[in-house]
Image 1 (tube, rainbow, N blue to C red):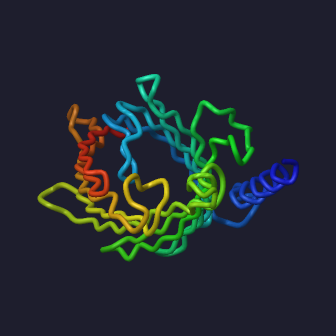
Image 2: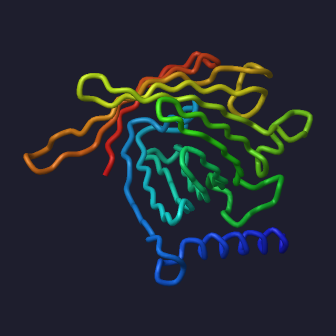
Length: 235
């Protein structure tokens, strides 16, 4: 436990140092952004994780490095309550990231392998412009005990997405799959397509000087035969 905490503190110190203001390190400026989505359904990678939810975010970026905190709280007490912390690096179209997913109600500082609610994921991706690809694999945390034989599952989600414009609306089509048994599958123990979706984004005009970004997304999960329609507002 002590070694784990030391590693976490060390990683945090390094990342914070990389994001120090330009007066202290180099000429690049620190960019800070905040916002929140209000969604009708918490849908993620083919999984229904709750109903109406508020999902706030804050991100700090500098020289390609980033630290992001993202959360989700559902209106229903039974809905997923989540806090995710991501450290990432982007250069050109290439990106790397490590995410700590935390789901309550297990205590946040409980890092015991058998009872923790933390899941750690590594991501590598490349955005070609007309097509973006990403590979996401859980490498530690609760996912270790997913398989019935007790072996690490290495749950993996691979996604390809493509943006396009139709009329005056921005769209994005996506397809996601998992190459083997893991947290994204329910009925198979091999490759499965778990998410096919299309998302439309547009600003809704409220007054002559004020508008709210909105999106609508239709998705299906062929593996579970689930279908979802999500509407969201971004603030």
